[in-house]
Image (cartoon, rainbow, N blue to C red; front, side, top):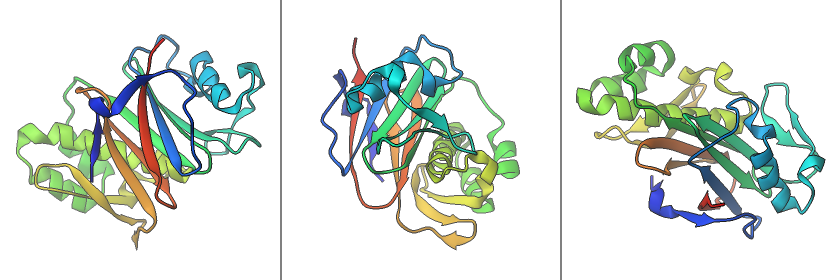
Length: 218
């Protein structure tokens, strides 16, 4: 599984030409707005409105019964994630998607958390890693799980343990194994590292899409 790194996030201003089989990622490294209601924030409204060619105030942003933001009756899909003063936004013409961003400099009791929330196979894979790699591997796994569950539309309330990923001997996620005990099909997961200290992921279910990544410049 290839990882998009900081070099892949090209400085740009929206909108960029978005084809039907594309997903665009926008990374905001310094987010000045509130961490709450990021989807309804002026910056995200400006971004989405630029793709639709409308006024930001006219965007019909609503939330489904699981709390996922969406644009009603536009054909444009998006998802957002906020962490430690940065924001990641995914945009697509046709493809529902999920994104997750994790920036953290604090240590976590990752094995205790994995035993409580993750699939047993994932916990075993984390336990097999050298201690120095466990923190980064845990965050990488968490971001893939959350991105998929957001794309699915259920969020983490569905259960992190019900989604199982495979890890390599270095702790990097290599692919999706199962969802709720069944072999997962038609899912794509893209690992992301928009800055060195970040771990992030993009997920969608359906046909292959090309992914273009940008870092917004003012």
